[in-house]
Amino acid sequence: MAYEETGLANGGGSELSVSEFLGRLNGVKKQNNGSWKALCPAHDDNNPSLSVNDHGGKLLVHCHAGCSFEQVLAAIKSPPSVLGIHSGNGNRNAGSMPAPRRVVDTYTYTDANGEPLYDVLRYDPRDFKVRRTEGGKHVYVLGGTKLVPYRLPEVIQAVAAGKTIYVVEGEKDVDALMKAGAVATCNPFGAGKWRSEFSEYLREADVIVIADKDRAGWDHARDVATSFRGVARSLDVRQAAVGKDAYDHLAAGKSLHEFEHADVSVPVPAIYVRNGNGNEKPPITPIRLGEFLKTERPPMEWVLDGLLLRGGLSLLCAKPKVGKSTLARNLALCVARGEPFIGREVARCKVLYLALEEHEDMVRDHFERMGATDEDDVYMHCGPAMGCLEEVVSLITEEGYGMVVIDPLFRFVRIRDEAKYGESSDALDSVLRAARDTNCHLLLSHHIGKAATGTGEDYLGSTALYSSVDTLMNMAKKEDGIRTFSGRGRVPEFPETVVTLDVETGRVSAGDELRAVRRDETRQDILTALTAAGCMTRDEIQEECGIQRQKLTDELKALCREGLITCEGAGRRGSPHTYSLPSAETLFTPVSGNGGELV
Image (cartoon, rainbow, N blue to C red; front, side):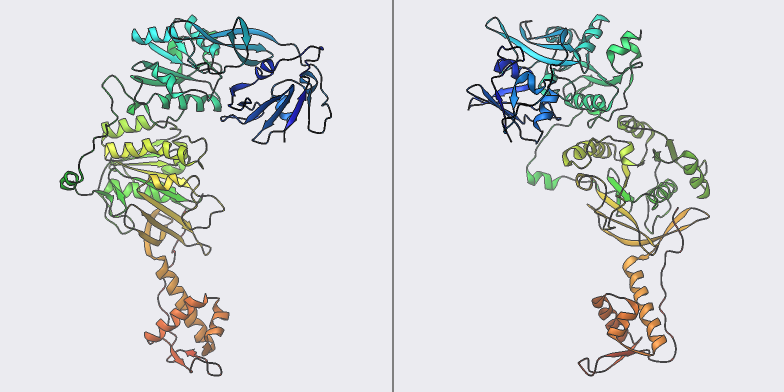
């Protein structure tokens, strides 16, 4: 739906020019057909979705994302009576004049030679607009003006001199840092607007990113830091010790050295960014297929035979309270001791266990019940560890860990929208690389949604989680209380198997495959029904036991072949198959149950 602006009246009888109207918008670009596209001010618009068309003094405004007329006007803080905009029905919208605004700061962006390109105006009440000078007049549209970082000449000089550069969120922070004796910069238009080409101005520099202490600030700092991959010589991410941002920090009397480490997750951690020792990112070096096929390869090494690879990445998924942490701690202790786990051999190695969610008293109690001692090579960390991959990699390298358990994943890496494939893939990319580079297995525990169907495909987040790991392991609790464990991925499939727990010792063990357990249960139900009734048709057995028809047919045939039941009748109308026990003796086959409860 389009909205029509007639007369462009500014409320005082004079005309409000199209350029002045467009000057109230950001990201304005003129189209080939003479219209304009701009960022809609009524929603978080990263891809310009607001169309503006001038038809002989009538301005048509339309948001393709669905924002209403009133929302757009409210967002630019210009009531309908000021702009004289009419909706499609011709009725003028009511409104009143806004409070007078005044410019409180003007931030001038220049090219590398110091020539002015555009200004960012800061208003009171709080607002920002951009303008440039054309033909001696102010124009509130950027047009094709090149965007650059703030204080660019100073940044270029500092990079050449080998000085540290601070990257912050806003111009006010930059000016405060410059006044304190540092060199700083930012991008125009605030959080979320950093461009990768801005990073090139800081190539080979030592960079400190200062994050504003809110969600948008942490996300912005993470994005900025990521853009310095293979660009910066060194990288650190910090935040204010007092207040929200660098300006507050310095205004409170804090020094440049008192910024604190920022708890943000950087998809590519600093350890993999270019530093003074050279570029640690491996180059792409193709070789011919024939040469590749002749290359001697070391045999695969397993932490858990056939399931968990040395240098591999795995995901252990389950609904809350099903027992994935219990299983993970059992695995950690078995690996540290070199004891078999769920019937499979392990390669004994040193284990680091990061318990990022559970209370440390519960973790301690479980290890004590399992009989853990000072002799066991399991090393613990209980508490926060968001964004600490670099520290974990250093520990693996220095201490020689063969397996690291991270419980759970989303307490270790921050993903803004876990449903987006790209964001999830980027976040796990560095974790996978860390596993490969250190030849250490990283096991990540992860939640399954409460509404999950139990198929193993119900983990929270994008399919990128599954595609990024070598092994996906799943724990499930069935309606009858049986808990199962299964595994699949780039390794041989581990069939869904019943797992049991000794409540007293907290130790987990594996029983039979679930399909064998279910088959035994089905057979027991059939034999129990025939024991009570003596002789029954298939339909009568199905009604009595509630067994799916094809499954029942298969089991009846198998029981007959094995001589455990007899079958009479022609199997047609008037003479159906009837089943009975071969003797008066009641026959039962053993059943493998759950034998206990996981806690």
